Image 1: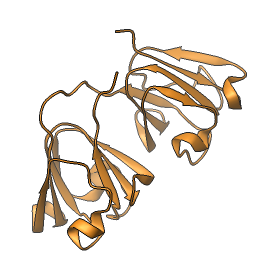
Image 2 (image 1 turned 45 degrees about the vertical axis):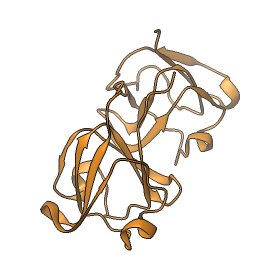
Image 3 (image 1 turned 120 degrees about the vertical axis):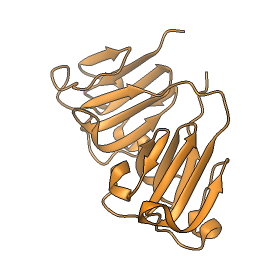
Image 4 (image 1 turned 180 degrees about the vertical axis):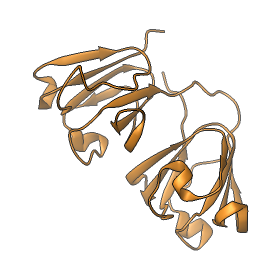
Length: 176
């Protein structure tokens, strides 16, 4: 399968463009602003700054005519990476305190409202046991996003957050 994402400087796929087919730690030399995107194939994580830093955005195959369509905070995209194809089970443990302490809940499915399931919104640590996950600051998969790979996250800053507020999370499933 041919994996591709196309970045455009202007809204509605106008202006200078750049086609990307693999992970790119620094897109700065290819375009100044990113105001629209076409994802031809694959699932991609976009980052506001080079070297996979800053705000993160998860995009599936489709058209995004302006940065609001991918819940962008601005027109800055400076790095991107493909998400791996994961076909197996999904398993995530979330904790109310740092270093895997306090109340723990295990999930294998998406959670549209953390407060409804967990009775609070602050998640201080987690373990991604299987699969890849996206955390969102707000319920129903809205707000700032955080991409988590398998591994241990002893504190919220380990997944790139500046606070422990998580409103929802979902499995990153590969869709053709």
